[in-house]
Image (tube, rainbow over all chains, first blue to last red; front, side, top):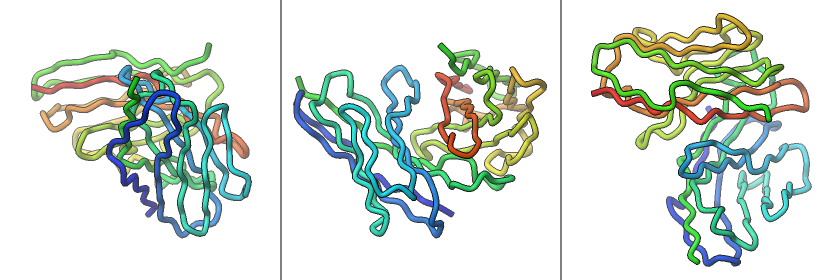
Length: 120
Length: 115
């Protein structure tokens, strides 16, 4: 079974600064997807960014980028120019690339989350 | 603006009562998931459907939980009888889930409190 570990329960950053959230995972599969989701106080789970394991190029979405290290099984999220609206819980998640027929293969395995605080 | 819609947003019920949570997935999405979020366990997959057929429910306590998808626009999660340990936020998510499309879009969740 796959596991996802987020070792930072809480992070704090000054507005306009850059912050990096860590995520490591364990899997025996070679093809998979990784995601970062944001959960603000509204509870809504919002997809921030995704990475396909077969792609070497790191994904980027505006101020959000990832550092994907497949051999190290590491998938960190960098937020540049932090804004007050970035304050939220951030969850790293893993999904197998196989479109499965059951066994939970199509579901997401989440880390425990990192609470990001933005200091004005 | 397509979105996953869950009802109710909040539910407080007494132990032993039946609880039904509903989800309207995004039109055209073929896969629907139910997740539960608690402080202790985090986000856990309970069950999911593809093209309305149940593919996996291994994350659900079978004796009291049931998930159904009576039609393409409605998924339900029932708890009978409810217990205080079922208090959590329950999320529904849907996704297109075909080669090249892997995103899951979440509803706003139902916060269930069992007293």
